[in-house]
Image 1 (cartoon, each protein chain N blue to C red):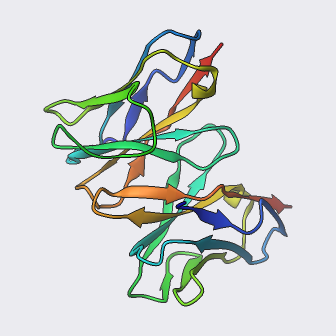
Image 2 (cartoon, helix red, strand yellow):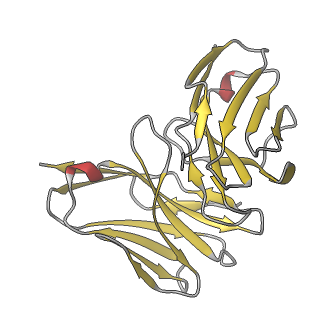
Image 3 (cartoon, rainbow over the protein chains, first blue to last red):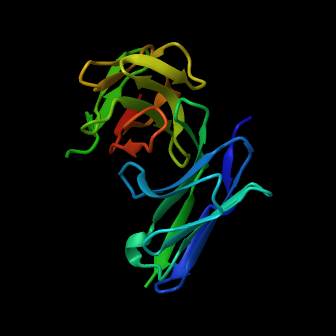
Length: 112
Length: 112
């Protein structure tokens, strides 16, 4: 079936280090990918997105890399801060309904 | 510009009851999608409404139904509640069907 998966359920990093969160997707026809951050008790918050015609996109302190050959997506967070602690989801868009397929999430823990 | 809002914040129901959850889309957005997020899981797509019509549905039974109003706000109705319906219900709005989805804070439903 459809699925978007993350490789690690929990990632623990030291404050100031760089974080890399990985995601594998299964639908090679997906054309749009999004990373969301979800803090406890809140809805998912948009971080960054990338279309399938791109390999890399940068935002403020975040970079998303897309490798279509192996169907892999990653989120890099530079100089990780305590406020980055949250669950991170990758999602892929399916078809023309805007339906998003989410993975199970990776919990990022930032140690002071 | 206001973001996506949802009501109520929390809700407790018993098996067999019916529930209605409400969502106000972000200003200027004509599309609303609903997701169910079980504890520790990623959100699962329930359905999408575009200009008051259903535009795509996930793998949910017919007892999950929805409605979108002329002002683009939306309702999610669940009949004959089951214990497994306990989850965070998320509403997301977007400018159009395939545009970036912005999520509300969710409604936490507990079925006893």
